[in-house]
Length: 176
Image 1: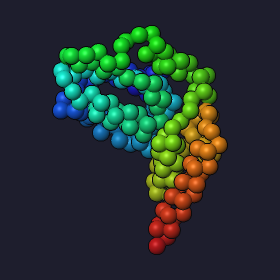
Image 2: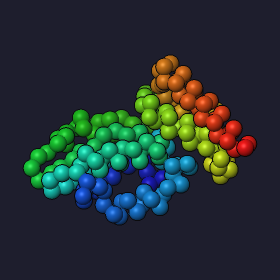
Image 3: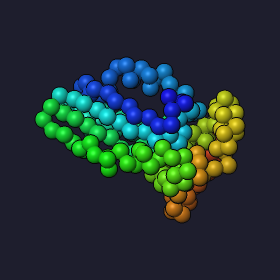
C-alpha cells in the first residue's frame, strides 16, 4: 500500500461495518495514525451489501482515511435494491486527478483534517518520541498540513489556535 500511487479499497458490509479482514488490516496499521506511509495518496472506497449499512461503513472508512493523511476522493456503494453513486468516469475523476502528484497543491483539507493533523503534530512534539523523529524527517513540523495545499485563512487561524491550545494543555499536564 505504501508503494502504490493511489488506493482503491473495497469491502463487503456486514452489520453496518467493514469486513473483519479489512478491520484487522486497519487495526494492525494503527501506527499509521501517527506515522502514516500513505500521506497524500488518493483513496477511493467501494462497498457492497445486500440491504443496508453502507453509509455507516463508508463514514468509518472516510474517518480512517483522514487519520492516515490520504486524500479522500469518494466512494461507490451497491446494494441488492439500488445503485447509489453510479459508476461513471466522473465518479472516479477526482481519484484520477490526485493520482498526479503535482495536483496535491489544489487539495483543500477539511477542518477535521486540519484538526487531525495538528493533533498528531502535538503528540509528536510533546508525547511520542518515535513520532517526533518521523515528523522531523518528513518535514511536517514546519507545515500547516502534511504538504503544501490550499487552506483558507479562516482554517489556518482556527487550526493554529487549536494547535497552540492543545500544545499548552498537553505541555502543562506533562510538566505536572
